[in-house]
Image 1 (cartoon, helix red, strand yellow):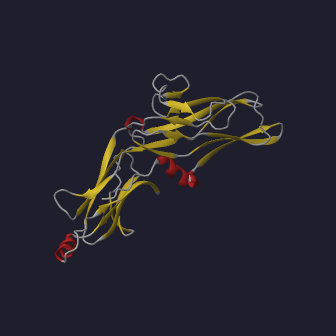
Image 2: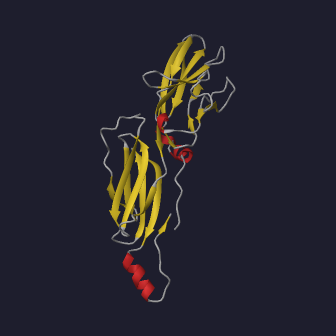
Image 3: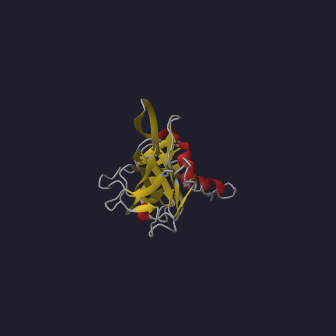
Length: 255
């Protein structure tokens, strides 16, 4: 059997550049319109136990001048507004800035060893001193966590394919199975799941392998593909005909 490894979240984010959302804050200084932008993607994904980059970018228009280095804060957008950066005892060993230069425009941060409890929304805040003092807020990024996807024949039925994956409880998650590129069925969204819920749920779907071909299970968040697994299947009848004709028995292979 051949197994296709799950897609990592870094490549997913790269392919998803089109969904990056900007928050624009305009300031008028000495009659000139200048622009300060705090840029955060609305959604991030991470495999369980991996590291994820919490992205934040500060953009200044050419006419805007910094009077001093901006002060960066990272927080979880929960009831307690839990701080990740700076001076967080809870997160100190798990977070690190991508660029330690305080004057860098890259304010992104790595969150290491992602766990289910890390599911939720994160926001970067910047205290900026230009011609006036002000605080700029990102719109926040929702972090969705997922585990390894399994997609294989069941032990009870050698023609029943079952796909299963554990992920953050989010109503926008959809698990679908395809055969040769055609969707067979999907797990409906669960409206009871509140976005940013910390407890994971198990999504599962099964299909009967009535015909041979490439079967693929995909996990999507809205229109964004998070992870997938493929299974190449030949019906049991083909095993028998090939075996009886003197050929080696052909087993389904999993990619």
